[in-house]
Length: 412
Length: 158
Ligand SMILES: Cc1ncc(COP(=O)(O)O)c(C=O)c1O
Image 1 (cartoon, each protein chain N blue to C red):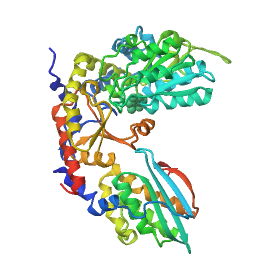
Image 2: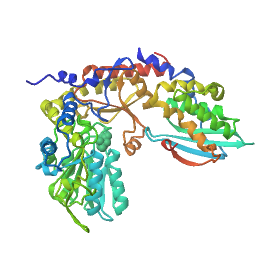
Image 3: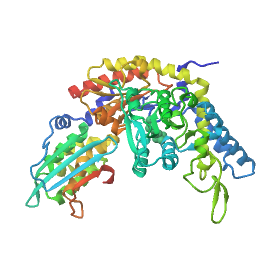
Image 4: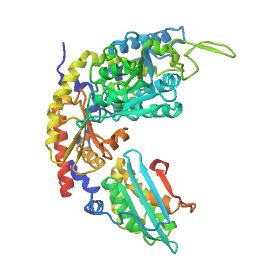
């Protein structure tokens, strides 16, 4: 029996509370998602019944923990359609995954004069690691522009990606502009010029069906916490031949094959990257989150969010003084909507919305170069997920109108 | 309606200061200068101070920010004129205590009009917005060791 989308909200106890005397409307999903009971219960079950260190013991608990820990690799592989579970590396999150690609693959494959191409809409975690790599190696960091409507400019991509390009790194979905980028086309360009394609999937994996093979990516990174898993667990997927060719970055327990006094050999990927005791409970929570999302169906989640955006985007644009960044066509917009209201500072708007029980994010969203490109100091950002409903969207619109009124007249 | 709680934060005086800030701009001649950044929101505030006979004779601030940070900067500039660095240090400490809900007994006397920002204590997410300008002037004219500094600071370093 498939449940109606409206029934899933009850799986999230945190949403059933009042904040500042108003029922909570949680619209900060791009920062982190709330957790369904199924995920919290999986953690609880693990700690109450199966907790042990993995790969280290012959006792029954160790065996159970190891089995579950490794089974989640296959779940993740299925979730993003990776060819093999051995291409799934556990990380702390997107940031660590991207840093590892830069510090391990990048440091061994990029040389002075090479180019690294990213875009103006990257989160700092898909920008600073490449900037660091460029500084260390003498490579050149280049930026793909976006169009007036906030969509990635493929003409600019064609100009920026050249035979000197070693790495192209791009976000699949923007955490500010609310667009999905044409990864497949950019990957084709990258490969034409002999570069590899690195994809930041932090904002896409929670909301749309991802297929790393169809995208023709070489590396793909995402965070568990944005798709209802606990914080502190994320994934780096890489093509097996690339992972095989990468040196590990952390040395110690778990990742070794044979340690002698003067030399050590390492395990194969993915284990050679996973030094020390891992976030085992996080992995198990990630498995539960993937099960939860898969049971609903990523296509239904995307369709539900599409419906909300169809209402919300035009409703925001109708409020006089609202500027929305990114496309104004709901068909081109994800559930991440960044905007400003009149000349109000986003912090003032976010405080006012919070008083109405509406949680949004205000700031530069870890995308300072993008803010500079948009010529704003900061924006307000509302971001949706599967448990949000039309009433949440209406509450945001109503609260914004009240905020406007408050600051225009100093009273309500 | 819940927005009415905002009145405790955005008092009319606060809105007026933010809309028409006092001492906004820069000085022809400054003895001390400090630029301070709030990395969580990207706001930047620049404070310039001129001293005469060991007291602040002129002050100016520039930069962008939210209503609270702009109003607080404007009020700060009003209150520190004519004060010595030691007095300013004491004011900044008093202000910092006030906005976390522990105002010392004499805070209204020490802070003058800026005492109206005590409502910030009920909005913990906004405390840094309120303290930005005060930390900047504190760094500019001298910390408790009497050392003045110039340059760029990040808010969290203070
Ligand atoms: C597009 C994008 N990339 C990367 C990240 C970093 O994710 P994490 O902080 O989980 O490592 C985020 C999250 O804020 C993001 O939105």
